[in-house]
Image (tube, rainbow, N blue to C red; front, top):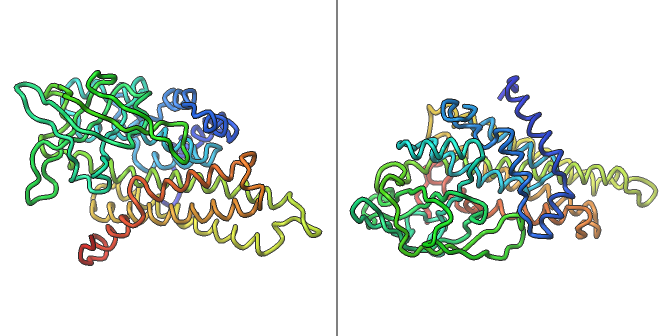
Amino acid sequence: MASLTETQSMIIATAEAVAEQFGPDYWREHDEREAYPEDFITALAEHGFFGLTVPEPLGGSGQGLVELVLVMEALCRGGGGGGPALGYLFGLLGTMTLSHAAKTEHQLENLKALASGERLCAFALSEPDAGTNSFNISTTAVERGDDYVINGAKWFITNLQHSQRLLLVTQTRQLESSESCGLSLFLVDLPSEALSFSPTPKHGFNYYKSNQLFIDNLVVPKSSMIGEPGKGFASLAPTLNAERLLVAAGAVGTARLALQAAVNYAKEREVFRGPIGGHQAIQHPLAAAHAKLEAAWLTVLEAASLDDEGTRPERAAGMANVAKYVAVEAAIDACYQSLQTYGGAGYAREYHQERWWREVQLFRLAPLTQQMTLNFIGQHVLGLPKSY
């Protein structure tokens, strides 16, 4: 990207204004109380951020993935750190999938409600025996007359407590030779007596509950299926690419916030006759972290631009994985160096660095591990043999 358009500049300014209302103290308090940031989510909805990429006739703004990553970075950089990342991301996954694949009037009606923020949609893909290997899921949807009956279990399903819809990924037939067959998507109403869940205690991101989900004879009409039976992965793939880039943008925004706080501290903290930022042992790691973050951010923007162009899907998918890898590595280094700048004080919750350090660790693991991004790059970008 050579420069921002007027629209993009306005979108960033709006996101920064929202972020300013919810600074580090807000997120520290909610993390400690394990409290859902409802007023932040409401603010996102009021400013139309959940419908940013939804076509205008369906209640959205008709923008692209570039605009989406610009918003994510600004929300995290503006004071929230990782806090906004999961709330915004998990409010988008169902919306983006419906944007690609919604067919029925009921699904389009739901898309409009999700775009406005009137409803939120949780996303249920991962299972205990099917994390990265989505094709190995065992949650089944069995056809019965005009309905499907769904049984199974999911884990690390975030925000069920505050969602009105659930995008549920199931297996509708046994896997055959093609890895892409068998998966089907359903849009399910919440709450439901056939669904039970319990929160999993976590290392960070305590603003949002991540749950074990149990599905016991959930009956849904055939009209709730998104896309075609057994071809759900084709409907899901564009969302998964976007998810990688949104995590990358959130990682960069979080790290930029942590880095700027460390720079400010290094200018003010005086030890041995001067500000500690004047010592190369402090200055060089911060400068190197900044350089890596800037390079990673350009990669994120390039990957999002390729996705929006839509003319080179293989190149776009490869760059999405490259961007996720380099952005997360740069962010983890920046957050580490920022915490180190504070010395022992960095371990205290008062200065927020310990929380940003905790939160950025998740980006190394989700939506897929750094090792799996390298597997994708090795196989699909470099043309090496499949390594797993």
